[in-house]
Length: 186
Image (cartoon, rainbow, N blue to C red):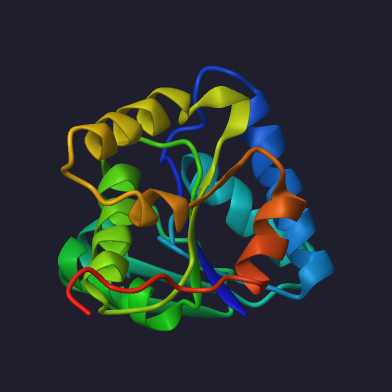
């Protein structure tokens, strides 16, 4: 199973983010998952890719030419796709992946995970989407999403379809046992 991880190009202010990134990749090895990610050597992206390589996992990166020029590409990957734009990068990562996990990150991470969640809601794919809630990083976001449900902007089933956990083993098990929900207009 190919799993995309969306995560920060920074490591964050607490070393727990890097520790939990390593733990997630070690769990991938137990499940024979392969990694699809943004192709960079920086931040948590570098952490997960280097750990996956060390664990002899299949690692696929997708990176823009602009980021390659800035010497941010990890050249040690099994596969490195080079694309022109971030939009192409996101689309190819979605196409290559069987599931998606958002680790702590910033705007890019949020954009990536919300795009695949929106696509699942509309029925463009039926792949699991997860938040790796390291150190409660996504607690406030989950509260906000529940506000969206309470205010009738998101159907509850589209929150219930999300995998939200701080336990890598639970995330991987739930990915394997995922049952897609009925799309918005089915």
